[in-house]
Length: 248
Figure 1 (cartoon, rainbow, N blue to C red):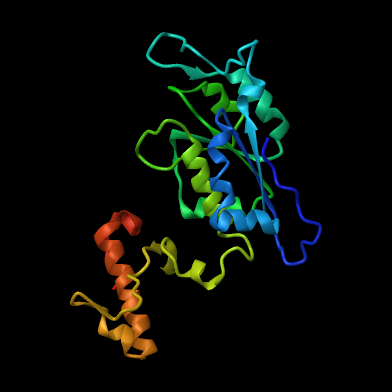
Figure 2: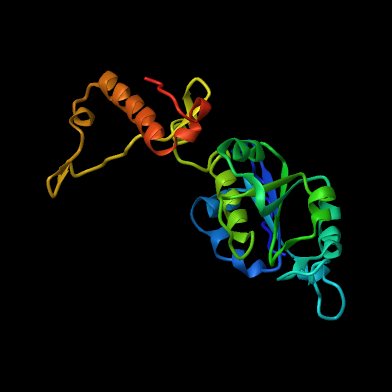
């Protein structure tokens, strides 16, 4: 198990989230959890992460965690017994199974997880997970997209990073969280963020929009609003009411 000890001085930390990751590849997480803002969140104590090796709950001398599916078919299925043994002690946490058949991960879900005291991420593998795990041992089933990967580890990292950046004191400028993509600034409609530019103002003849150099804050705010609406309509119309629409 990989863990971080909570520091004794948490006067600057408003909330602590503990995330437990259940996986057959604990080494997958050794480096990613120590870098960037995730590493910062762990160092400050805002985020505590435990990585549990599912094979330690495997059956028999070979620590078996998978078996052939009933009814036949290709691939192997993760067994319910090792997962039950790993998840039963975590019954007080919000347990999430990472699976392609889960609900699409959304920013609103990350917001909700960041407000929880303890979250458990269960990384599926092989052909799938015994359905009794989904029915009786987890609270959510989550997918990171309409594609299939080797397992749920990448999805678990996505949730860890998505939660870490929402914790107090992790992001340098908290205001940036309020204006990023998928935040609703048109009522409750989540919009994509506007285009961003920095120096130089001209490169290879590619110029920054003049309005951003004008110093006119009202015009800049209007340009940014138009950008968010136009980008969302062009790239993600599914985010708009009814899947389409004009927010002009």
